[in-house]
Length: 254
Image (cartoon, rainbow, N blue to C red; front, top):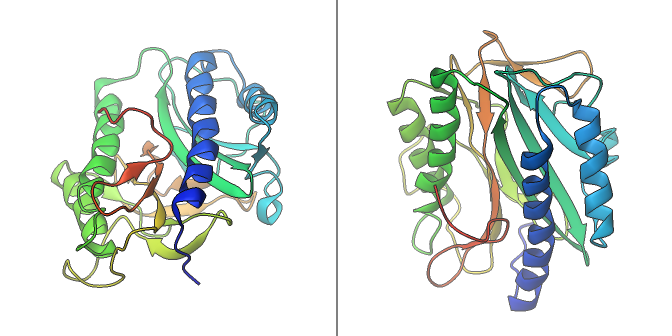
């Protein structure tokens, strides 16, 4: 059931979101060629706990680590391990933190060393897709308006929009209704209507090639079917009477 948050709830979510944001800032400082994804996971876990929070992902439906580290063709849910980041890689870092009973959730795709201009452009446009969707995260619009804006911007650049994985409501639980797809098979202005107090995790997952994906044998890691790179950008937001409030990003910048 979709839950509407009051002002006190949203302040708690903002506190959880700040932990997530700071964790991602730490990841951006640490992620360099030669570092393993497991080392990133350990640093993230230590930092989240130092803030009095709990990693939302650890043991969530059996997930074995505290963050997700998805490298190159990995779309999402990459499990940290012995892989050492290499010059030219991109890595999607997805972080969740629970604080005072509420969750924050956000992701960034980081550039490792000298990344090709083609892949840099993918990462840039994926971030832009989030902000295009955010323009419609207001009272008077519907979820499909957010979805359509994301899809339109991505496909205008020739990219594939992942269908099988979507954004979601968030609050006391990591995943709550409503679903927030990054594509829409129906006209804008349909589906769930946005109202104040809704809290959403909007997360474009955009592929350099086609939209098709596969799940690896580990039961978690999702990769592009064609092996081309994928980028991920996510923030938790709150719907207000005016502009949407970003709960995992202190400054709205592209």
